[in-house]
Length: 439
Image (cartoon, rainbow, N blue to C red):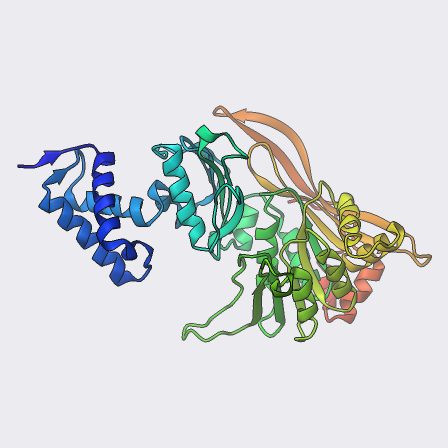
């Protein structure tokens, strides 16, 4: 005769049995161990005639396995390509951020603060990170596209369990058509960024977290010719995947992806600054610094001024503010006077693209600027393109922002000269000169 119990009781009983007899299987990631563990779970359920209302035996085995060896209800979200972020504000308050900008509460939650802590520790275990009272704030990763920031009790209230931000980085590779359809930019703006970077101009993509700057930079890098050597530098986890393969599986482009490595022993740490130094020794055509947060900004501008095409991102509130933010970061390396540093970073990154996520959750390139260096050494910053907001309306209970893209100015004669010298054809250059058509 079958014995019906609730799921939590079934989980506790199976978990105790497996932990006592087959604990080694829980930490094994190979497929055979997963199958073996599921077989043991099924045998225990059948031997003890356990049933849970609403579950077949196979469904119950799968659910218990996910709770024990994977990541509870979070597992169903981690491999999806339409989710950008999972925010655990408390064990019973989980919000899911979708690629279309919608933020929807999860229908499921953890059973208790302890349950939440167990699952998050399991997530962090994948990157060798330990979350406990001695380390209540931990940053780790689950894979090359999933970043995890966890905050435990002592920093957050005990009855919350743990607060977590799980960022699923760039789950979809967006095309030019996707950006245009989504309103991120006009065709001319995307072509402008792609071609100017292709012909040697360094670009900084700026904006707040989740403004779309990294996704946009990844697209721009993907448009570079296959014979150009690209060296990418990322902090801790790898977000980019720029390697291209043909139908036979052969690599057809020329990319080196690198990540930093943290160690308690400073001599064993590999910083972004160290990777930038290394990049200059392997003859790259283009260097990508995923994000400037510290003194790597100084090495990035040095690389850009040494003839390499450099792309990077930074957190700032406008194109103009970006240069002052760069100056602040550069001073962490060398305490040079601000005017000198300002002159260096404006020379290094003549093009700034400011990205923003608006109130209706749409992402836009709000402005693209060029910094022109005058013969007397002074700097003038010109807006080349911008997004003009004309209205905010409500459509079916949701806010919608209305606007259009506008070309404001042509690039300077100085930049035109550099682009021609670097191989841009006159016909390509002509597409960015003249007219004020908006799209």
